[in-house]
Length: 138
Image (cartoon, rainbow, N blue to C red; front, side, top):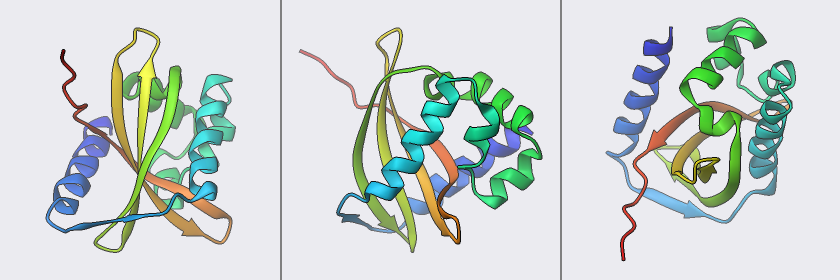
């Protein structure tokens, strides 16, 4: 299951790179959805965090426990971030992607891309991919 999620995220990221990105103004509702899910993870409220996932993601993982396990094991920086900063929101091939910088407790910077979809219940997270963090040097 975990390999499938990573393969889907890789394919989405790869196919998205074939198209030009249009940078959009920030969207507080999108940022609020991501922030709320991360706050739920920090409180170990996997049921709450699961509500911010898209219907496709909910169907794929079937339960908040399965979803929580995937996040703890595959995205520990999201489960326990030390710092969170929203970067640019982009439209790529008709999809909205919110780039987020997360610094984990060890001080490592991670750049993640959240694919967002609009549902009748508001913005939901339809996938997350880990991007290569920029090299920083003196």
